[in-house]
Image 1: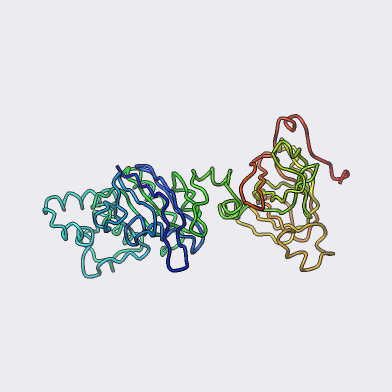
Image 2: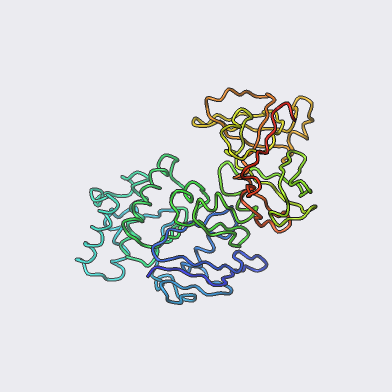
Length: 393
């Protein structure tokens, strides 16, 4: 069994708390990514699981066995690091089998395990080559093969693709997913790359300041973020977050207003809240017929356009940019990011009306940061249209 469990794990270095009361339960055979900004505690969490560092408090269990104070070699895990660190004077076979030879495995068993790993990773024709004769992707496969032959309870991977070029990273992502499917072994993967986390994971564990913010399937983290941090971190580009307050009519800010009944969402007039909307849920006024629950129109001005091939990112400012001061243009609360189709006829410094999709609007409590709701569609709005034509604005 390759289940991994952390119970109330804390790691403190003098006056710095790297991991704070971490509770994490990773199921046998699960692929879990630890993701977060630099310094969030994801590598320290990984090192605590591996036994490279001991927790200040808490308990670590692997495969149902309490291993909190055991050395790495007795934990039944195998690690793959960002620094591949192959022995340059050894060929691929010797690099892959090195750990087994240290443990005095029989030659026949070593050959069997190396052959199996080489078959899984498709490096059978590379076994007699030196690392200097391999490409970056091939060297990474060899490093993974070195871990596979140990037949561990769990694989721990600390940003193993970070040193590869962009195209090769995409290729290796698919290789790792295939590897996980074939091995059916627990993989815990540290990354700062959201694309890796979103595409490979069964679940994502989002960390910040040493604390677990949310652990859930990738699309749950994207569509139902637990708090403001997850909402702003997951997604590229990230969610628009507009600060405002609750009024008798709903949400209002300097930028936008959205009508709803505060009682429907257990908020009170005067509460400081943030409205969240993904760029793909911001629409131009001429797309109103495509959305079942549109909000009122908002007057904006296009600022910067970023063509991405399959879409265009449009940065919007509130009102007329020509009459706004530079400080007003640069203020975060007056900025909005929209995603539009690449064939959309739109240009910079153009006055446009936009609206949001109520079904995909999020509300967050500014004080606690916790999510209040992930949709402003209620029974009352199912049959109502909260949209104004341009002449009514």
